[in-house]
Length: 462
Image (cartoon, rainbow, N blue to C red; front, side, top):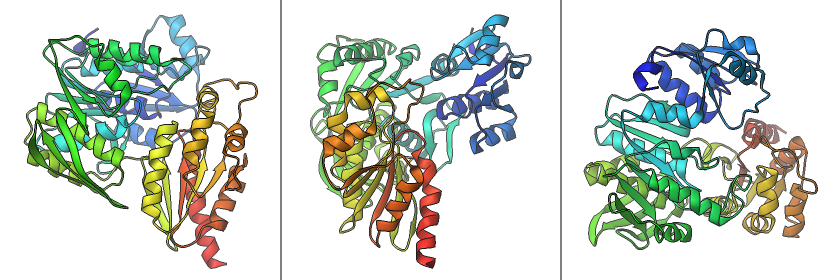
């Protein structure tokens, strides 16, 4: 099937409210494609798609398929889902989320952003920078850009910027013109049990880049350095960045709410990079976006100006509000490396105040693999409340619980608290002016933020 053939089809999504799926549905609707979809529960995302013309169902039922001819399904959906079963019995064409996105990208000059950490932010940064450069790229991101309030857009230009999720290996179908690999570490251990398997999938991703294209690679990551040592492609340009490489970051200055650095390209100063968001990791993400923008022919001044306007992405060190000088921040960090850099950034943000964290581990397999690493990373915080593991689509693993992390920390400043209400009560009660309360994790811990803000307000009234 090609893109023009897709335009005449009726497409149904299972799990349409998810970050990745909703973006694809949004672009299809913009192309005039008939879209329907379901999700387990109602949401603002579903309501937004309904306004755009999608037929929306809350709950899963084979009748929801209607006259659909194509089913789009994510790897999180089980094969016994009634809509999945119904689609198979009717012989519908079934596309994975990645296959559907690949189809939408197929007639564009595409850039795919991959890596263990920083994909959403880097994809968002590149999109904003290109927009500042006068382009109108299409984009599909696994999170909302704060500035635009959306995760996907059908642009008028030839460019298509897409976040490429390696978690199930499906990013191999994209075959982009250009790619960014921010870093490589062991993660998604349900699919990749060791670094060798992670390296193999990223090597296949590099092999999928179109001849004549490019790869932007972050060489501050040992995993990326290892990958590059195995790559033998003379038909693409490989551009490295970091504290060494082709594009070099130097003179870094990290402030509580901003970050700055100088960027040079082959020894020549490109400019001063100034971000309105904190963290050394965001300087690295922005440099990757800058490198890709330069390769695409955008003026450095426009790219730097665009990056300076970037205000972050949803659930990426997102400031959700302050009450009586207590700031509540939500972050998606769910790997020990992400937790570490996020909490280091939070400590800098809080200054003399305390950082109080409500952490929800994501997946039993990840928790089992990284107990000691999580314990080390979380020890940066002043107080930690550990919720029980968020299962995602995994079955429980015997003996695996957040209690293991609490035991490994062995500190009076950590408490295993399976009750979400008790956790936020404790956090709100102990917080004082100047402190930061952070909800951290890739599950549903972010849903606690409104309750935390409400409890802080009630604390003032009492």
